[in-house]
Length: 385
Image 1 (cartoon, rainbow, N blue to C red):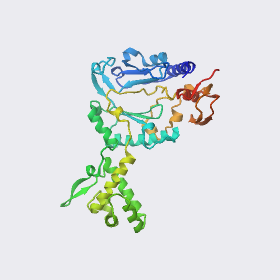
Image 2: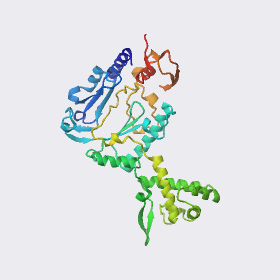
Image 3: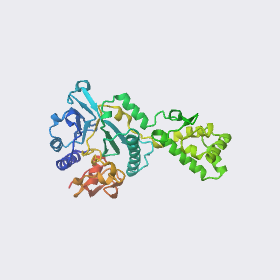
Image 4: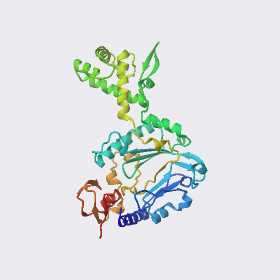
């Protein structure tokens, strides 16, 4: 990045921060703060081990320093500005989740930016289903990361004092690590008989049971021969077991709806075994494990700017997630007012701000929000006005 480009972005980031309405996280004075300035060179310079007392008023600090990135810690400390973690003296930590489109198995390099963000939002909704329905967490803050994903901050009292191992168990649960039918299936007394049952009222049992009912409905829509052939596509189900399962579906539909796996014998239990892997792959939340297990993690400040995109790290109210469009809603108003000249060095199609642009590698006059995005991405340099 050329000095002219860096100076322009630093200046315009300062203009943004002078107008920005930022709300620091709870207990902001007990958290560590860090930032990345607009320094010269290929590597980033992280300035950390600051307390809010070191920085002063956060709005004033950001307007003065105009940093490229801004972070605060998930952890709270007695002395957040101490230079080592042991000297900080840990008190508690939020539970933080990071979903990044670059790390999602469902995305590919051929996906557009919009497609990757849409895939990431699907994963976010799955994660929130785990956090709200399975764990019952209530104090959640969702934020668009400003680039390729979303952050979720959980601040329920129940999570504040969890250490790394306990947080890893939560990670394993939402990522379906080690999920098996054997771990899900339990036993119940039905009249005078002990039967194997698949839980239907919550957790991974509910998800697998819902998929089981969907699969049964698919079989019921087929003729007998097609249904038997479909069953035999599953590992562990041969011709004999396929006939047994098919007969169970025909004669014991109500039992299957209750999660009773005894009615279909080994065949039905084998079917559930096959579906568990499918459900785990489709419905897990592929979060970045180190972020959640790290009680000292620094995470982006909602309301700040992402120096790799020029987009805002935007809080998203729970009820607005479905409608939220990061390529429109995270574009700062500060950068919407006029056009600028940039020298595009990496051309191509860009969708941003509700418009689509196809740019060749030459000088262009573009809306400032697009120019800022391209410069932050390393795809353009500031042109001479």
